[in-house]
Image 1: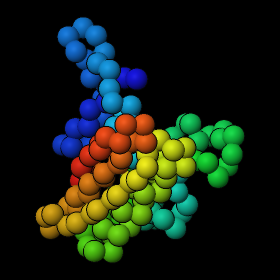
Image 2: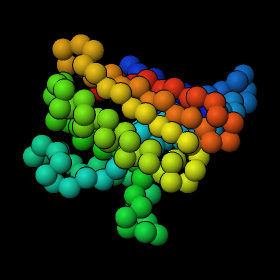
Image 3: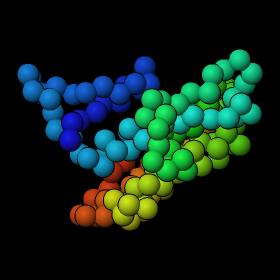
Image 4: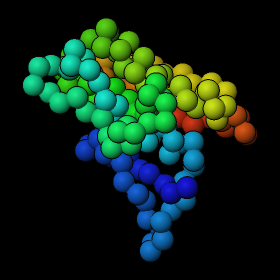
Length: 143
């Protein structure tokens, strides 16, 4: 599996090169990054008027319409609030997009915690325990 690196300044992931080769990654961290940073399509009531509904091309033809990928974090960010209610919403959105890791038994547990860290910024931390070797993978992000 290829390695993804998250840049908090741009809120983007990119492939990691080790010299001239693509670096191999921790597959669990890559799955977490891809799940969190892929935009899940939302309904009109979930974003402010005039904001698109998001989504990505992989959702266009799902085998199971209930099995859509990605997170709703982009929609939470579009609303622009940094309060305790938004922290709870972020925690729920992250849990939702990572639920497949528990359902497919990739992880034995996933915890998410969010808190206001600056006046208009919420930080969140994901802790996931890998099912195969019980290692802990931690990812922190900001909205």
